Image (cartoon, rainbow, N blue to C red; front, side, top):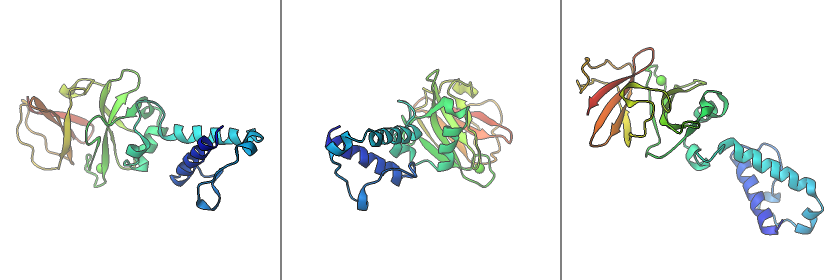
Length: 214
Ligand SMILES: [Ca+2]
């Protein structure tokens, strides 16, 4: 292995360590970039094996596949939200994506006084997009779209090109024939610009759809 690539590998290990993904392992001496002797490494295959395993393990923890967010983008999400998508068997079926800006919205969607997170997701199997909502403290995600039919949005939210928080308050009658809902918490306004929009809101038991304009 060339000395330069070895140094890059050590840099990556250092990055992983500093971000908390590697608790134990090799580290440059004195906190400075370490130039390793390639002759020494050539005679120490065990060291290289440990490096390779550490690098693989680190990358897999925040980039499980080509659909997943970069480490930098995913770092904007709370550890609780990331743990859900890393640990929950159902949530693992969905990749966090960022094709819209913003790719996540914070609000108290279920009205319990604690901040929840809505984030864009893609079903890893069907490739259909949607929204995952993770309530504060929850260990699982509620999936809207992304292969699950939801309201008039269908099971693929690929039509959605904008969204934003709709703070808890009065909802005006929209295109929906039913009376406007009374919000328990904040809602999400999901939009196809110059075409249609709808409120996604918690009705006390589940998320519901209220058409605003079309
Ligand atoms: Ca909440």
